[in-house]
Image (cartoon, rainbow, N blue to C red; front, side, top):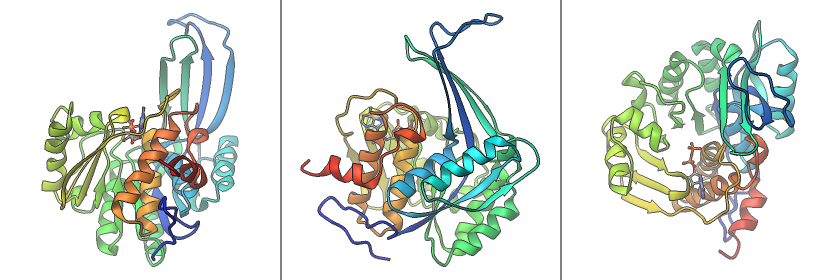
Length: 320
Ligand code: ADP
């Protein structure tokens, strides 16, 4: 489908459709300073419960970027399930393919030191570990006629990742893999991946090449291309993005922003990129919108609350 675009490459809402296969969690965040040492108890200053998980964050990002978005995953049968599903619905994400399974919804327990900004996180997958390859195959088969782009991360099981890659290859869908958190994967997965968007650390873990500059990012990207991936986008935070594909290597500088919290920048980037590709935007326009979404996400606190809408990206890009 061809999108309606303005000078900033604005995608008309609903002009593309994406499916996100991945994790759904609730982020439980406490702030204190200093954080307690083992065995110690301290009184904190703030507590919040918000929708999180890389899958859900990317679904929110794609939906806010204007894509008609379907989430495929699982929640438990607990009060956090309601919070998570309400959060997705609030952003008009279709949750018909989110299964309710026995047990708890995934959680991330986050502690932030208000003084230093340092944090530590314990993720408990819970329902995210119960997503099955069969469920994903059924969802993708149902969505394939209308949704050309699938987003995947690695907070569900390797079996789910492999099933997603196989289904995308069979159904002719474009799979965008954000390989986070990075872990070794079966070689077969890469043949089903259309675009991989690792950050520098993930690129190093997967390829063995330490990414410190454009040349090393390009070397790492070649590892993915040799395995059948069509496009590689190595995200480098405030140092920008290195894009390697059939038309060569492009180094795209980051937008100049004043970051306050870089959480979910990569999710904002991947979701916006998937939405732009699904909307049929030209590749440089899609990358520009994704970079703007990633940059804007660093200017607000939190994960999903920091992810910008298409209108916010438009406003930011207008006149730049
Ligand atoms: P991740 O969150 O997965 O580590 P990155 O930090 O690389 O991902 O961020 C993804 C993209 O978001 C970057 O390629 C860049 O376009 C944008 N971005 C991230 N951090 C900044 C920043 N400090 N300034 C400007 N843009 C940023």
